Image 1 (cartoon, rainbow, N blue to C red):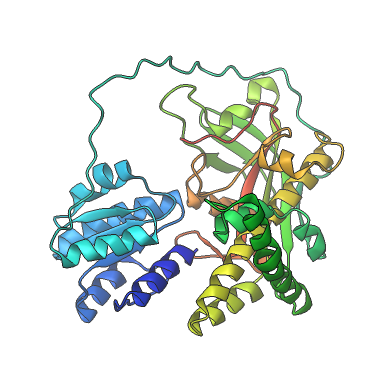
Image 2 (cartoon, rainbow, N blue to C red):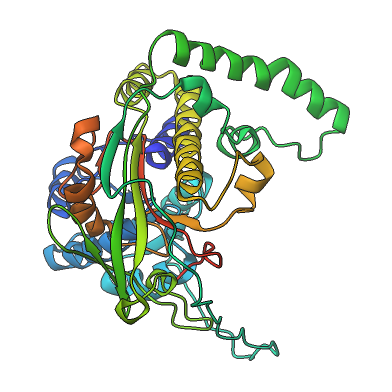
Length: 402
């Protein structure tokens, strides 16, 4: 998940700064050694997942202990202004600055050069907002577990690439990943941009992915008996009983993923899991483009890969809903985007289940190494274009943040 880091590298380099890009999943000890060896002026850290944010907090304490004196810039989807100011900055004596995007990083570097760089600040509002508090959500306990087609895990290695493309959210790709937004353009000008630039680019990359064999979509998935117990889910599997613990919202409605499953007194339940991957070829190709300074193609291809990974996850989630009998046929793209279906999939490393350590029991149950997916020491999956999820069938299960 190095796209954000590489984007910062590209922008700073193009503005005349020397950037030492030392890679992904780099331990604090190596960051410290490189900062001293290269005598850098500023250290930057980027993280996509909640686990990464917590590691940044720990890294800053280590930087303080060894006496680093460089300001630290923090960015990534898992961070907020409040988290950086309240949880990170107090751990380090030098400025710790939240950068919402790559251009905020450029701004921070310029402020450093001007001697004006300060740690990110946060002040709680002294005014209590007059808004009603959300009520505790009452979950229906009368539902019956679905009839699953098997118990255990299965591998699927013959997935049609065109099928994966049919689940691609092109709006998220074109506007979000690729940045082709309408903005102040007229409707006609935006349509012309899509016709003459965006769609030809998409067709070119799709043809390359399909014809040159850059995609090898594979899945390992399964269904298991389970019971909820407090904030945890106890899973029965061939490799022994596994425990998945989930955080609970501190404020109303106080949700926790374990709430969506029946406990032992209610007779237990069924749960699904999957790991999906696009394979290693795409990651190798994007790396080649980056190393060749082909930044535009790198960013476009990487963005497409990220969205195709989500498309594969969406496709397989739907297949599992159909197998469980909670959906009869393929839905529409609008339904996928708005969660217009029963149940939900929660990705490990994201707000409702942020602990990547859950990958350890998940891998013991699903054996993703059989489809070429392995874990790093920090429980992140390789190849990069891979994702995992727990599948919840409860009718009231929707995305939420803790």
